[in-house]
Image (cartoon, rainbow over all chains, first blue to last red; front, side):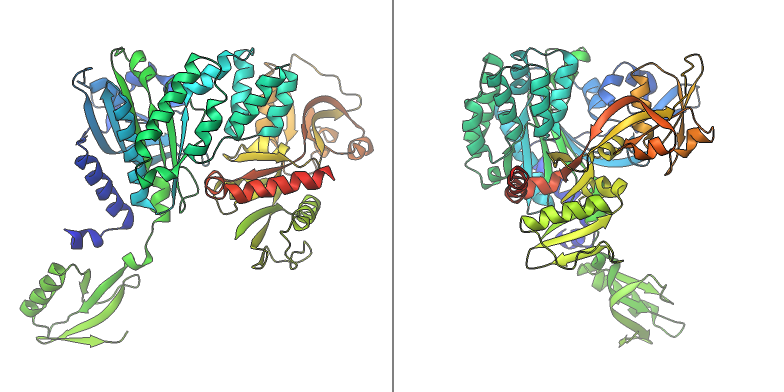
Length: 374
Length: 207
């Protein structure tokens, strides 16, 4: 099996590795149809960040959509209950508008969803799996973790309206301390709150050190609960080396309509954008008439990964074998089967197309394979 | 090695002076040269000279770890980056300007010439005003003179170009200055170096 895996592209190898990790932890593959009735999304459009949906009319005249999101379909179909949770993972494509080129793009995702009752251990398990996924992709990785409760608790104590809150959150998101400073003055926030807001914006280091700073910022019960969740997460995960990659990062402000607890975003050194994104999303379940359930999950986006993980040597065959009318086809067949069994990638043909490159080139002369120079 | 995206032109020269004064010198950097990449292994820095409107793209996509960009361009292109510092120079105003004798006719669609279509659209949406955007790449002041547009949305530094072309400022949209931006991934992996950089810049600015 290992030999076969090595012959695949790096991104495909990673996909199999992630699936194997999920299976080991008891998550089962969820397979779904490519299309969903368009009506389904019209009810929950605010969860799709105003992204338009790619639609078509099926043979019966019904308007259908190519899935812009996987989680909503999983939540719609879930049979989970509080006592019997569902642990699922998926490998699916979603279709979204690309911000840069204003065209629809197919994005391959691998994701994981836990639906049921989210306990402290569930949070540990999911964060641990997110870290493991990042470690499968690159040896240098970081998982930024935030908590919507901490930010929303803080803003409960700040006398600003919704628009002003959004503007302040935008500053947190872009780590824009100079604009934050200006707005604190403009909105007449008292000195202590202004100072605390700037401290929140500056938090971004390893979890252990930052937890102490966060503890000093607690203003109310909501913030305390959030802090305790982060602390208990760290208390369990600190036994594992992987936890060194966790950073507290409140620039992850996210959408409170969707997320309600832990939120996280993963980066690897080789990819310039975040490749993993997730969090606890009980609010979506409430909107989808499943208020007794809670859920947490994440997705890994393969669009950037596939470009970065291109392996030039993958396009190079271990051996290129030429044959002609004088070649003994039975011997050729046996030789190729032997090479394949040993995990080699072999290209066989009468000619060598321009794009085909080999580590070794051979020719079948009668029943003998002879190495040749190209 | 840290990769820095510099905007070509006068602003870039100013930014390079600032960076070299805090230890990121690279003797080969010259805006007169046709070279676009300058590297100094001793200082551990590589500079890219980039058109100001493209700096955000290079930083967002991680080719450059940090870069300097005008707030006007940042507002227009909205790259997904961290905006770490207001450098306080390269200041200008984003304004709506028109011919000195222009009278707004609120009953007709306003024709707006600009190289900032997103800012213009957002600004007039806030006023519920129907507009027609005329996207131009330069010499915006010419548009109302030749009757191509009613107004222009553009940056104004001293106002002398406007005055010489018999234009006046009608409305103020925003104030712009040079901003230090960082790629999100690079920031996560090089936090201490980027923090040290911003601290040194703040110290220099305070002197």
